Each structure stands twice: as C-alpha cells, then as structure tokens.
Image 1 (spheres, helix red, strand yellow):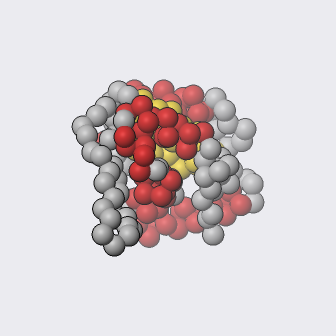
Image 2 (tube, helix red, strand yellow):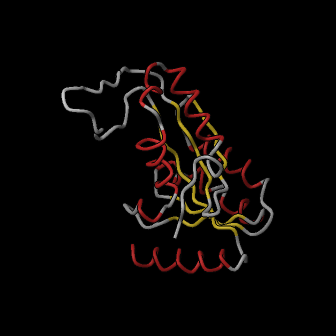
Image 3 (tube, one colour):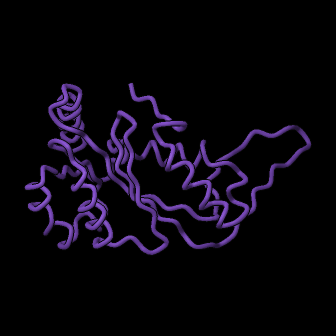
Length: 184
C-alpha cells in the first residue's frame, strides 16, 4: 500500500507541476507548554532550561502545498470530525481549480461524518486522497509541523501559554514568507 500511495502521489505531483491540478497536503498538529525539544547545544558548564507546564492545547489544522501556500485554523477545543469537515468546507470555497487533498487515516478522516462529505467536496472540485496507513512521510505537511516544533519555535515561546500562542500565530502567519520549506 505504501508503494501504491507513493506512486499515486508522484503522479499527482507531476500533474500539479504541469498546473493541471493543485496538490494540497492536510493534517492537524497540537501545541502545548510541554515543549517538543529533542536536544539543544549548550556551552560547557551552562545548562539550558526550558520551562514545562501542563496547559491548554492549541490544535492547528493546516492546508499546505509545495509552493509555500498555507492556510490554517487554530482551535483551543478538541478536533472532531465536525471541526475537520467545517475547515475543509471553508477551504473548498477558496479553490481556483481542481484540487487534490492528501490526508492521513486518522479516525476523524475515516468517520461516517467525514465520508458523508466526500461527494459534496468532489462536486466543488476537491478530491480527497488518503495515503497508506502508517505512512506519515508521504504527507508533506508533516515536515511543516516538524519545522515549527523543532526549529522555528523559540525556547522563549514556552514561558507562558500566551507566549506560545503569540509565537505560534506569528509562525503560522508567515509560513511561505519568513518561514520557508524548500521542496526538491
């Protein structure tokens, strides 16, 4: 299934390159005061301390293509199928040409509520393409989440929930501008 998804995405990427379709990657990610910092370089004898606290969670739903176009919605509530459907409905209203939306197999993407909307989105020019299960590397928006959490989010963002929120909103507003991912 992985190889089939990989082949399908390569074909879609070629169609997008030829501007026959827009190819967009969709996913959700969460941000809290529990920092996602795997390691950090520090001077000998000096310890870098990053505060850690339980906090509310900021859930981001994002739509990204390889050209740097990015749209996001941020919620402090749980992300349900209804929330995902509402965001995709709003995204579908912005389409300028036939668009393929790459999604993973999260339960909120396979629920009856989600599946009940696929035909309507198709009529609006939005085709949903799920990737093979357990294949996050095929959904390029995962690179964006990694960049935000491990490279772009400063240590100081974790000093308070307000600081986290402000830094996250700044990054999200500037994806494709000051925060760029170069896809080969």
